[in-house]
Image (cartoon, rainbow, N blue to C red; front, side, top):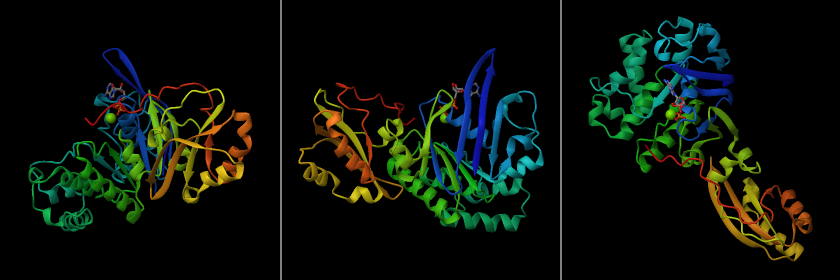
Length: 360
Ligand SMILES: Nc1ncnc2c1ncn2[C@@H]1O[C@H](COP(=O)(O)OP(=O)(O)O)[C@@H](O)[C@H]1O
Ligand SMILES: [Mg+2]
């Protein structure tokens, strides 16, 4: 549904160059919720703004629903002033109206009622007054705000404002919804309700959602896939279950942090990741019985990701790695991911968190 190929964005201001995107290949499948995470300045907002051509890429291509937006936009020389597309062609305008966008600070017009805010994109598309009103009321119903149609933004809570933002984003019947930190300005409970709304819309309307967040909880709660950005590049990406099954994945470690590794020459420490059916089987006790070994659990985390139970456990087996090849093979046969990167390599400091940045 969304593909970028070797996407690069270089900002030039006052003789200085900043490479905000450095060859990004992003692939978002139809109907999935895809999360982009990374520290401040990693290039997340630039990526999302390039996906709907709010920002003109320096090079590379962006296609949405099989349509190459960069080709529609034509190839000019460098970005226009302010990086925006003042003279975008009508084909591009049409394509962009099919991409909804939700913002961190809602961006509602305070002088317009809730209904009129939702109608705004339809006005721009030239939809007739009656049809606009019908559509706006239908969307407000969908986001649970039918009774607030005549209210003004100032009379709404943060969560309600964001619901209006979502309704407005859906006005052009988009196939894709982009969200740049849509829940960062909200308290945890409101965040949960907005995430639930995005998930419901994703399911009900088959809407593809690309969202940026710095909260791993958001990824855990609603994302099917995720990417980690650093210095303008995607350094890890995949479905959440693939990531969890990837040895040494930083995203997996953030999603399921387990304890540190104790030192020791004569013991084997492995991380075992449980997903799907394997998460409910008593594999560890079977292992202990079958090979008559004592197993210590050093750390564990269990959670539900996208409705599936997933967990990670750091366990210690007696003896060196060579002596544990058979038990480790047994765990793998049970469909578990076993990450042996941590074998007897001495004390290892907990990895530095990916997302030091707190809520802004
Ligand atoms: N309009 C701009 N002009 C110049 N530099 C910019 C502009 N927008 C973003 N940048 C720079 O590009 C880099 C990526 O920024 P951004 O995409 O906003 O990151 P994130 O959303 O991950 O915090 C940063 O170094 C930022 O300072
Ligand atoms: Mg940003």
